[in-house]
Length: 451
Image (cartoon, rainbow, N blue to C red; front, side, top):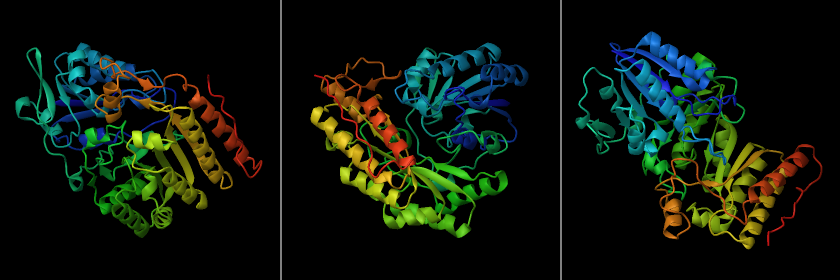
């Protein structure tokens, strides 16, 4: 048996942002020794399609596993990565017509049954986590009716098997660092670390736009802190990796687990640093100080709304004061901070837009003298099927239930579709003034509301 594992392109070629394929690397470590294995991450190939053609012709695989990580690049882009999955499947079927084709990954899981119908070359679809079932899918014989959490074909039907149990985080398999060498991903990124680290899976917050609970489960499954530190230490000492990003939906929840991870990293005295997305109301002066001692290099916040209405709409369970208090903590500690917000949310009016601008100005003022604000990233909300906000828009008649959400759909109606650009200009000016120390206050830009 010969197995080819492929990470299909899901990034803007030429952007030079590389992400180590954690999921595929863990699955690669589960491949038995009697199966010959090759891997290909098309995201790091200068000519990915020629490379896929070459490995299919030279290796002649019996099974091809396609990992599909992202649907689209977000940030308002209308590009879709679905063509990558479709083209890859067609190329496999053309050059290795007898190969069994598997597909999985976060993006595939969101539209699994539809993709099985649209991409007829795929034989087996894997929904959600794959560690417990992947070994059953790559052997010489296959009994799909007995494997939980997969999609499979029975003549002209696509059968969906009920999901099985999720893996315990203390049994998470290691990374295949021979197949996917971390050094192949080093030295290119400008925004996030190339090497991810998993501290937990699942999320219990149910933010209105988010599908993390669907993908990872509705409760947090915590990885033992010593295993997290073991993996970071090994990557640091054996491969020289010094910068990590926690892939957790929120790195500092629950607080006791987060603090245990920090203590474990401090105890080992490792020469590394890390980042992650933080929850504002769980950040304290004490655990921020502890995190800095443990190697914290930058804080990412995803407050997502700048108004009370928006925070309630998105079910953030945060207050505006929580957002400001967290900003004060990172400014006082002069820790590099990135903030993410969604603008022009459903139901916003002139008063709310002004409220959002006022809160933004307060944030810029807090960070001004510290000069620690790396970026404020604004987006419009991407609508996903099944997300609470999407269902609410359909119920209220503000979204056609027949809208195809597999391709990028953002909520950005008039008259406030200019607000993102206004806020970006405001942050740009504030950032320049802060860096060049041009005064104690951030510059304000009055916003003209359309009539």
